[in-house]
Length: 318
Image (tube, rainbow, N blue to C red; front, side):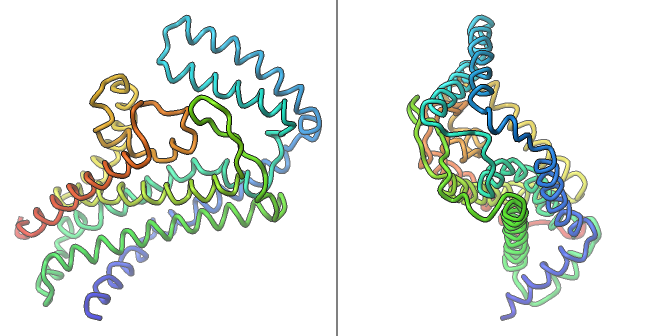
């Protein structure tokens, strides 16, 4: 029970900050705004004449594919365009409209918003240890009858809990607003994905649920990385800045090292687990879901070992 009081104390600290409530409110407002805008601007003409729209898209895609191959663009660019072309062809042949919006389709379309939550989680995780040193409040914690590793573990658990809370908020908001505006059905709506260069049809609800689960694993690894950086630096602003830089630079670096044989063993190519839901869109080849999960487990363990080792020997007088 004493340890739970530590976790509870860290949870209260997180929610005592104004920015935390901004982090909670902003995704809800964005989802609501996008939902209303999408409903208001919905074009019934396009929905009823979707085959003409998709046929025109394919004409443009053919031209873009030719240009990508001619300009020697990265291989995955042409592959992505070709996959879109194949999916459109399949939709036309099997009478599957890509313009049919349901609550589950809305949830799928709002999935990229999880990247914003990732930034919020980075800020919280980067500040939760470094902030204590910057303010000098870490001394108040360490004089309490708890070992250092328990204090650090309580901060880690509280941060993970907040990440999960944000994730649940996003899921509930997208489902609720999507259902109110587009109806509560749609679980059996077909979704087209690419596997081994071929179009496969699955339920969109299966895709969305799998996507949510994989995204939370990504959240957890992001927390471990930012938490390690927070432990390494005394300044919370420096810790936040470095964590954000590593995230943005790492994602950009993937494009430059994608052709290297060793690229798959680095962290950031494995951070996008949702790429395995559309296997044709992988930037770095030679990876699988089990491989990426294994790599993320190794990196997470490394981050945690460094975090706890450094915190155990950290000089609180500095």
